[in-house]
Length: 369
Image 1 (tube, rainbow, N blue to C red):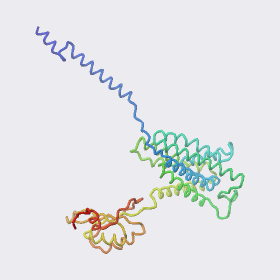
Image 2: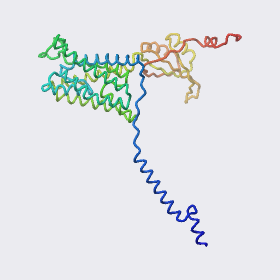
Image 3: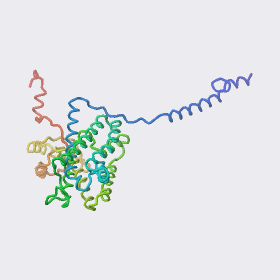
């Protein structure tokens, strides 16, 4: 009887309960492993797109304008002067130059290679980044390829000129050289790239690949990717084109200038300088800045940790042309410390009404003064 009682009290009061508990634990662990094995990593979903008709028409117009700038610069300055632009377009240009003897005209081949190399990348961008962005990049690429073919056709039929940098080539004029050609394609194509990047966040294969990597791994720095793409174009240009160092230097100048133009356009034309000033004359200095420069000033409380005296931290953003006048005002105030940094794309505007006017405006009509 005692043995039966002792046996029945093991593991949830049922005979053999310890063995059953071990079996259940083992089965649960196996099921958990199966679930983890069957669980697939979630792919990033594309962003929600703005599909209003007016927005789509504007997107198509931006694609056409950007494609016109880029294709015109490639035809006029680059394609006939033995150097390549950067990125995937540069690789397409090099492939077109290599296959020109077998497949014919370089401009036609370049258009085809641009489509072959870029469309798979843009399709992936449409799937994982943004459907509209991927589609608009394809539209931009098709515009660019068709415009390159159009320029070539106009050259064949009507003698549309291009910038000839070599004395023994066609369309050469005194004073033409590779440096001017590289400057021209870098600046003009940079304007086209900046239009696409401001509107869609990408302008070609390299930018689309960067966007895809950022989508899957937002913590990664993808600056190395652009550098690797451009560096590969420079190295290939040295071996493919027979102009030696001229091709390398022209390609570097083109890439460098296009990046500068893109950075300038992305930073915006409304850049300025932000000054932060620690002072004990907050009221007087703020009043003079607002009166003479017409810029607003924001005040924050500050404390000097050496003297433990109360001070004010003034924040003021001015245009580049106003920096000199700002510094002249600042020099007249003692016990004042300031530093500045550049800011891009200053947006917004406060109502420039003095505090007394704001108080009067806030009063209700029936309130006594």
